[in-house]
Image (cartoon, rainbow, N blue to C red; front, side, top):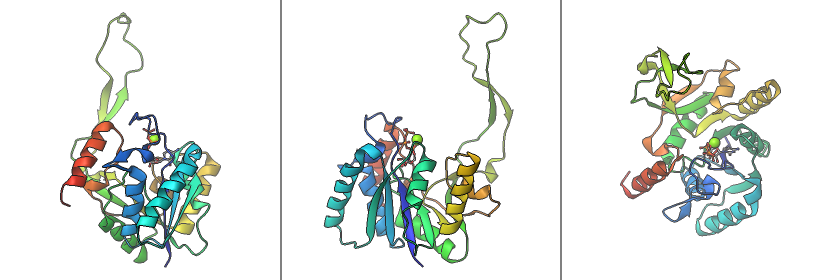
Length: 248
Ligand code: CTP
Ligand code: MG
């Protein structure tokens, strides 16, 4: 059954602070997006790739990917479309151009450009086995707390600098919590319905599974991988360089 990958790569990369979209920042001499597309195609479970790029960089991204593909032996379709202001808009733009034959969609952040093929295959296998939505996850290493932020300085302390940021209001059990990664896999029709529904309700989301959860559809989990880390800051870029140079 035909499977597509939608790769949202249209973010500004503000936290990385390189003055260019994060997907175009180089890791070991190649843009993150090239690593992400290469890893996606190498997983062997994807028939079509839709890259969602910043509108102002469409020509640059198209040229970059056609150069890369000339050097690779893959004949699978890779197309590039313009993204929107939020990640959710960019994913929606990618979904809108999928070939009608596509049955499964893997949504994969360009910022997680070192995700191993095995993770794509685990997600795909769960879809092929009947799951409608699948996400790769990892256990948490840190304890997590609910915190109520301090909103106003206490009476009489207006001009005192306080280091206190908030008050703890609870501690969820770590054993039931997971860190969530991409690629996230979905039945194509379900994901498109979830996005349509969320847009109509004016709801945004930081991942696609959230939109499917709203519809009451179960989301299955498979094992993620540390190499699927999201590159957000300069420190992450340094860690990614290290991961690239160390044996998997
Ligand atoms: N993304 C996108 N369209 C947007 C915002 C984000 O396609 N309007 C993509 C990013 O390119 C990235 C993924 O979604 O591959 C995850 O987003 P994030 O890590 O937040 O990347 P940026 O938005 O680029 O970074 P920042 O938030 O620091 O600006
Ligand atoms: Mg962002």
